[in-house]
Image (cartoon, rainbow, N blue to C red; front, side, top):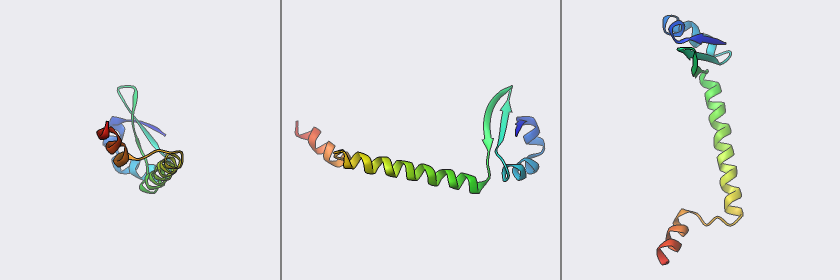
Length: 78
């Protein structure tokens, strides 16, 4: 669903309810400006992001990434 910022401002409660069902894209001066999503969807996206970065960190460590503390020691030693 797409709505103007003015519509969202004037009918905020209605758009908050709609955001529980589907994302609401807010347009300001004809450009996409923001998206309203429900809290459950926000938490789901945060969990996905956390899992992604956790996996990326584990892969980096497994491939020989030394970490920030060890890198600082190595750089200080030179």
